[in-house]
Image 1: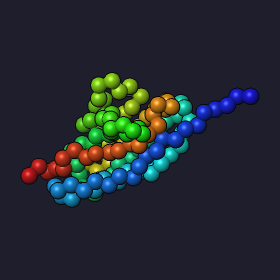
Image 2: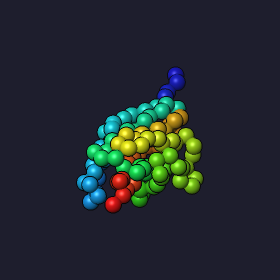
Image 3: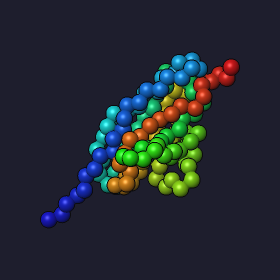
Length: 117
């Protein structure tokens, strides 16, 4: 018999209100189970245009870890199977070739809103 390990990457719906224009960030999906080797894409939509998006993961008992900043730049030590893209109000974050250690809570955080005032 061959067993395939299934685990969950829990993507939490997270809304952020900020003082510049009261922009709101909505994430989807709210949760998703994937198998090792598969890919998952998290979408982040904002109510107003923002300059960029940052992506974090939080694992049980740990502080949130920055994975990507300025939408598509990998933080030091983060493997290149993580990628980000987007502009304006639509952003996405993809994990390719998912590994068991990727399980956790994922968050989008908007950069500052433009136009700059």
